[in-house]
Image 1 (spheres, rainbow, N blue to C red):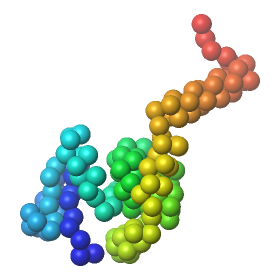
Image 2 (cartoon, rainbow, N blue to C red; image 1 turned 90 degrees about the vertical axis):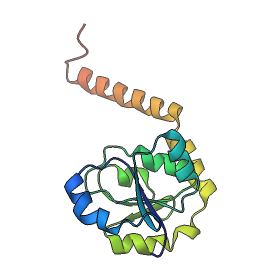
Image 3 (cartoon, rainbow, N blue to C red; image 1 turned 180 degrees about the vertical axis):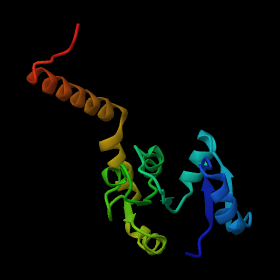
Length: 154
């Protein structure tokens, strides 16, 4: 894509990293910085063009995607796990199925409104909204159990 790439995060598969990623690291255009704590994470996301979230596993939630969008940074991600529930394709980022599609999506990033991304996070992922949604799910589970005649045990 002709852009600088900063890889941040825990290395899940060291052998893969050593054989497939490390040979491309040059310390300038492509660098790996390991796990980023809150201060460094805020600095990285605050100045990022996009967050590439090209995972190869079923993401259970993906807090990094929420953090990026809260900073007005679009997310480009594979449709694994929770990604389709978090990213609104063409509105808050792009859901892709290949590295080539991710590179193409980078060209569309300027079409997205950073303020819209932040509003989306505020409307859908605030602490209050998340707590309210969890309570609704718990209440629904209780209603289902009571309907089956196996209500909560005392």
